[in-house]
Length: 379
Image (cartoon, rainbow, N blue to C red):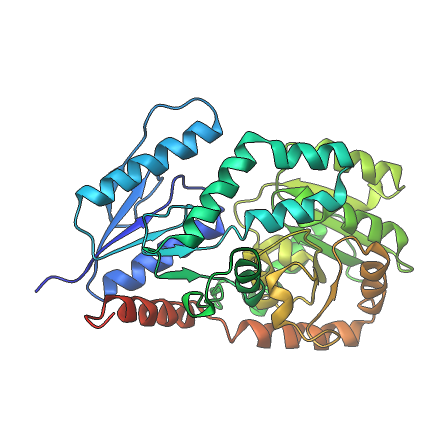
């Protein structure tokens, strides 16, 4: 007897994307359990052994792109027998939606904190944002959607607050991390060479940030905190942003350009984590964030924000610190606290202990239990 037929929907593949890593892990776990997996996509670099259905209707612009793909997917799932359809896009025609991108309404509210009144009004009037908000409302009200996988309790609370979705439909499955790949032993192995390449002495305090989308993930707050803190430190910014020159200009304006390295996108982030002493990502809005968990697994204390889902796993002063995303003074004070070597080392050990509770295997087990419940005849 063949296993269940499951469709996984993701419009585009980005090799660095957290959702893609989640999709890959889900496919691997489901195939081991006997499921027949079909990936429904517009473009995918590597299907990882799954069957591929490519839907790439003509479009001009991102709103038409998203609308045409959603329409094509919903037509496909109406015409094809699947036992379960899991989407990573905002589609009302799925059985399971993974809210990996968070809640768009909440993101607009948080982004409104850092722009002026005219820009704030234009965000809410923007046709693409209006399209996403409409799809979000339709998705969370859809009678077909049986479960929304939330990647943090914060994520779940936002969906309940904005859309009134029942808590019973909102299981929380935290992101898993490869505990062997991201390991303190790897940090020790890679550290000296990477710091030497960056011109850092062994006693230099180095802060590391890993992520693309500098506005959303708090690079401006990081730079202001470096300028404000009472200790001498360096910042390593790994990741890409089309507005990166603005942040380089901000570093010059703050007088810290000689202590900030903009490294761009890196295929392997481990040497960069290894070069750092503290991971800092005071995100304006981050439903969870792979980089936070990778840093914890490498044994780095994490300084994050109240609007980052990983904050709910941290014990402030033990494994990291949590501040408002715009609180540069608070971040600066936490950097100063972590300049103390013994404290930093103890918090790094506590950080690794946090990550050890969230292995890829644990995430896979949660996913399989959820799918089993949804596929059971009684369900």
